[in-house]
Image 1 (cartoon, rainbow, N blue to C red):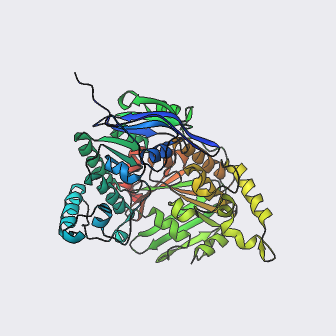
Image 2 (cartoon, rainbow, N blue to C red):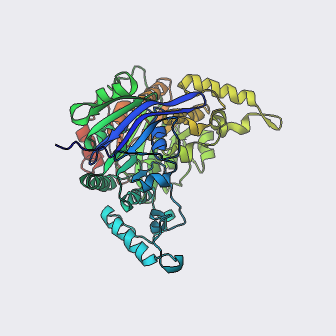
Image 3 (tube, rainbow, N blue to C red):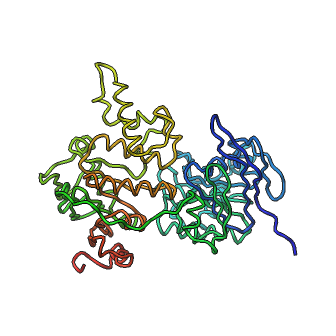
Amino acid sequence: MTVPVPALRLEGIVKTFPGVRALDDVSFSVMPGEVHALMGENGAGKSTLMKVLGGIHQPEEGQIIVAEVPTVMTSPLQAKSKGIVFIHQELSLAEELSVAENIYLGELPKRSFGRVDWGSLYAQTDAILSKLRVGFDARTRVGDLSIANQQMVEIARALTVDAKAVIFDEPTASLTDAEKVVLFDVISDLKAQGVGIIYISHRMEEIFKMTDRISVLRDGQYRGTLVTADTDEDEVTQLMIGRSLDLTRAASTHDLGDVALEVRNLSCGHLFQNVSFAVRRGEVLGFYGLVGAGRTEIAETLFGLRDPSGGSIHLDGKEIRITSPVDAIRMGLSLVPEDRKGQGLVLGMNCRDNMTLPQIGDLTAGPFVAEGAEIAIFDQYRDKLDIRTPGWKQTVGNLSGGNQQKIVIGKWLSMHPSVLIVDEPTRGIDVGSKSEIHNLIRELAAQGYAVIVISSEMPEVLHVSDRIVAMYSGRVMRTFTSDEVTEDNLIQAISGIASEQVA
């Protein structure tokens, strides 16, 4: 019987940066026709390992072996020529070019005299797009597409080459449920064709649905490989972080205060209509619903990013009018946005400057910024939130996802808000950091903050919330207390089956 040859194998990979051993003797392999999960906390070494595989970083030691042929990867283009294709979490598209030009960038089909064969280009592209069942064509300008559809363009790139292995890095982060189904079908097709799949994700439900084996990195070292069908979330978590997590919902141990924020019949065009709710000091109010339910749009309206078309907002019993984020901040409302990298942080700036940015005008000494005051604020919230960074000078873009999220939260806490709105608090964050963020949210409520949490993850919203507002198609269907909510009645509510009137 012939023993299958791995589609891809990495042996003894070592990669160091100044003062950091990012990868320490890591070995990893994926078989043809296998979906192999690569898991680990943020900072465990997953991204560095993939950059070594893609030729972005050169290892000090170790080998990359493609179909049993030792290979030195010197660039992403060479990796692709060897059949190694990356689907990146961070989009790397040219927005001004068409879908076809993006998919075949650097490899455009040519006619005589070096002219682009546009007919062939569009035909090839449309053939690929038909497999993905998308609602746009080859000629569409990429900048006109939604983030989810741009992600589908990234995925389409994998179908243009004779791939030996395809690496999917958090591929569903920007996709709707319907688009996820298409993605999983694509992965199944690639698997059937004998392509090896490396699947990087923090979403346990996807890992257990899609993968055959799970390999784990921790602190730059290989910690082991598990057969997916023979393991469970607790064993994977222990391998990732070296301990078990207690994900049971702890009952509130503090009394709730007065109503901090009340919304009455708030509407914003077709995005949401007649939304009413209240959140008290010391309470975590969760919002749950499908994509397009209007949850994020409500947060943006409360923060002055959208103009309401009806209804009213009341803070401490008084009606207020918010026309801009400046108004919201002045009145004591803060928003930790869904897209922390695009909207919550300036990735090229250091930790201190990111944390003090909203109040920089108040931290002045004459014509100069009071650096001492800035550093004091950073030190206070670094300790309070357990932000792991060598110091304030560290560039935020170099932090793990969990520590980046803590910087954003610290930025707004330093403004001493009455109401803190947190949209998708743990998107793209590993399971260990996710637990820390959940504990932080509960601690903030215990300290008297009124906290609104918007999440697309049911376990998360069930775990952190005192009450849950279930939304469907821009409307509140039902508000649950933590005692009465179940997965079944929550799903019914967000599917439009159970309404507030029949609750």
